[in-house]
Amino acid sequence: MKSKGMGAPCCRCVFWKFRVGLVWLALVFAAAACAGTRGTGLYEPLSFAEKKSVLEELKKNWQDYNVYCDGAASSPGAVIFDPKNDDRNLIGYRYIKLSKEDSVRVAIVQVEFQLDFVPKLYRIFDEEKKFYGYVLLARDLPAPKRVDEKTMELPAFQSTFHLP
Image (cartoon, rainbow, N blue to C red; front, top):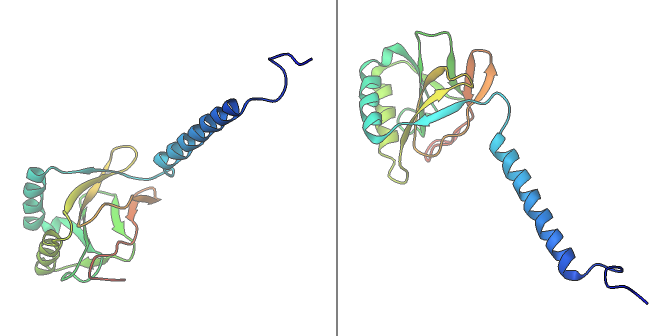
């Protein structure tokens, strides 16, 4: 004669254990995705008011920055402003350096007026909260990554018009 506590487990118990295991697996994957890779940079979106004042400062003092664009200045999706007065570099993979004031202004205006997106301006930092520069872009910011001790790089960014 079989006792009640012995024998094959009931289906309800197996199903419950399966669900708990599935939830744990999902949590592990979510934690791994949030953790990212070692050596990635941090970024902070600026508020609308901050963005407006910082962009005016960037336009006015553009020569204090190395300015990079993800394509032609007339059709960018992203513009990087890397301060010249520090020993750190903020670059973009396959970005083009802009060396004329008109090009910088055109690139900013073109990103700002991409109607399909809400352009944002970000401050970029490294893991130790050292400031690397600004990035203006039409879409979400791809995660910056460390190239070397003093360089952060944004991956290739495809604007709505320019394909590298």
